[in-house]
Length: 96
Image 1 (cartoon, rainbow, N blue to C red):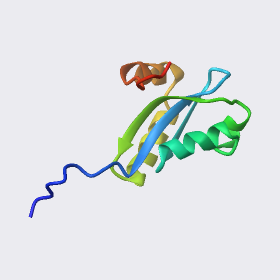
Image 2: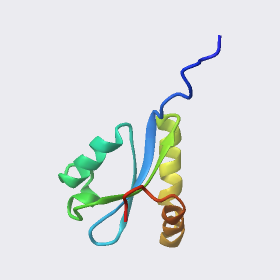
Image 3: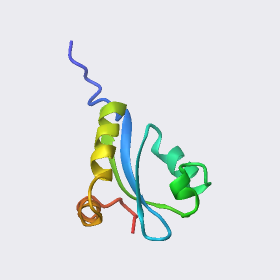
Image 4: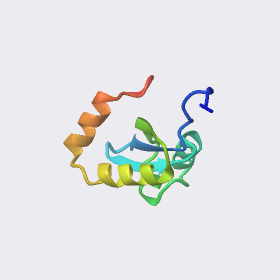
């Protein structure tokens, strides 16, 4: 029997935040809002703890944690210009 409730909700997200010093941090999260709060409270990652506040500039839903981790690894390897192009192509509503 077909699932009539529509597509399954995302199980994880890959995201990019812009730190106060202009650098980017790429990560993954199961609960994106909670992860952003953690970053801005200095508990998210060592990298962002000293570069607060951070602002979400890109987020993409993923079907699984594994998919999110693969995409995170891919984006982290990109040069800054390619990350900027990704961000420009998929702006966050209400973002910078």
